[in-house]
Image 1: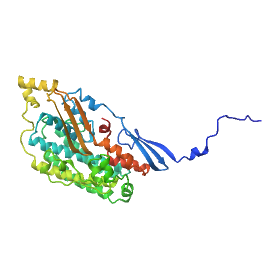
Image 2 (image 1 turned 90 degrees about the horizontal axis):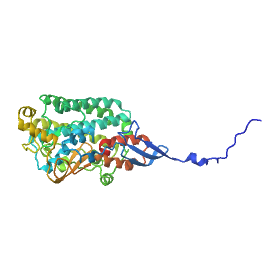
Image 3 (image 1 turned 90 degrees about the vertical axis):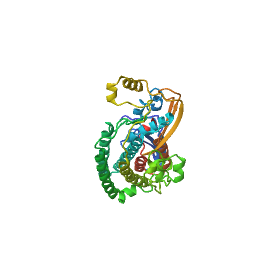
Image 4 (image 1 turned 45 degrees about the vertical axis):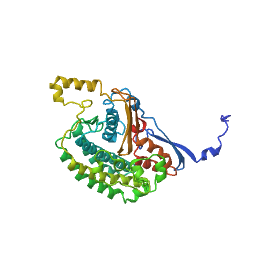
Length: 405
């Protein structure tokens, strides 16, 4: 006789094997996730019945560090928010500090800052469109667009010496003026990028596979987008005609001719179309800026914030002392508070700065579009399928650096 095997454990109920609801983790280390994002989905077959988002995997206490760094030292931390558009982060932050100080930057500085922000918008949209297309299998579009992303970074490197984390803006000015060959670099960029945008649209806009994967996917109605606090291209794709550059203008935007791209359906397809059109409008703005860019001083004549020229620092004792005090002790910001926001590539990026006097902020709070957009995923993904979740996340363009802070 063969040995028999017996067990005292009860048999599992067969109905457990046929439970249609399964929990699936997307991220935080999924190769298609845009950063360290975690989404827990309850799926029924391929359909996402419900989902919940979890943040905090990239939390670095940036806001708390602001209390222990001088106002100038903290500029480098703004680079690490949305690192795809670091120039915009730098400028939005120094604008808030300048408001407390009561400083109005020079005309040339304002025009240069607008150039920086529009260049950042194009880079950010290139990354969003190219990688979202790549996630869905459209590799050629990635190469068409990323060539011009690198050209833009070459311009930025000529401006400030850095490509990704720029730290270009300063309170009261900019760290450097534009390089001598900047006109040539910008002219090449303005002339070449539209051709690549046309090629991408030929490949995607009427492509049956692309439209099937994006139309009607991840929809946010106008009311849902407003209730969830969505801003920027995602809000405009839902049919809300709102843009801070036009509706709460700052710097030289009132002097510029541009149109605000607005969609209708609030789906992945409309978010793609809005970003494509915004890149075209940003090129239009850059062209105008290069024509209108005035000569003149880059820095305000305010000894509280003015950073002396290196040649003067090396040759004049009183200038050396002033330079030393600014960078070792920090600038003295009077008590006060200010909130300033700009139309960043992904939406409203705001900095709320509270000063109690001295060289360090008492509190700094960041309003980042990615935090609000991530919460909208739970609404927009309901009823979609698992591959759609990747398309939706890519169209929201969530950047983990500004999501967690």
